[in-house]
Image (cartoon, rainbow, N blue to C red):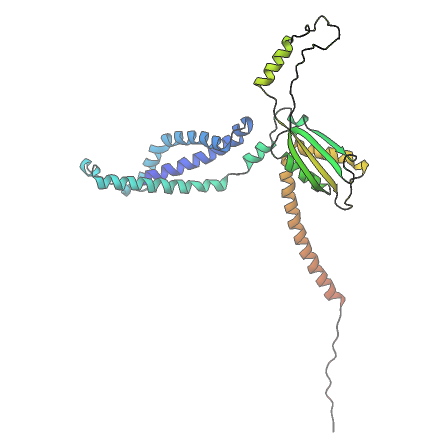
Length: 306
């Protein structure tokens, strides 16, 4: 049972650390899922089991030399011996793998998800468009955000709006179809045909290539999120002079969705600090009040009568 326990411990240890490293590097670069990273980590784990299996067995024999049982070939072939050996192997591997789960305390489980959330494809951060309008919906400020479909962007924008002192009255999120190519035959056109123009009723080679490319490699989906917001204090639309600043902050939030998580964490820290300060202020008020009030009690007199 000693060898299976050591194998199970090393197997889980290598798989957890290797899978976590792959998830934080190749998983972020190529968009691999956590299960794919764990599968790649299992490859390294299997290699480690082959390499360190005999070394671990020899080490355990040196530490506890009395654990080895000398049995004859006939005794090993007994059904009872095989059953006990199988049961010992199962218990040993289970115990070793359970001990290997201790490694989860030494890895940051959320690091890979945050890195994947923060990793935008090249050029994606420049594809976002923000439109802030006070005319479309009277009494509300309309914010329209168009851009690539990236995880965490909607949460980041919502957190940014809340941090600006605004509340979201309505939210409409959906996909926007773009890149649809329309090919015109030019049968009704009366414009003169230039040297580089295709004749009427035909399609140029470049247009055909673009059409085929768009069919084989369709453009990535783009989202269009529409927010109806208003100032939390006045319950009205924002002032016109504040629209540009709001648009800049929302654009920055869309480019860096990781900020929403940082903002949430910071809000939790501020809430904790606020609660601690409130308790401290209450204690100081009580101490100050006790020092401001001075009470002098009279000493009771005893009447003496003859």
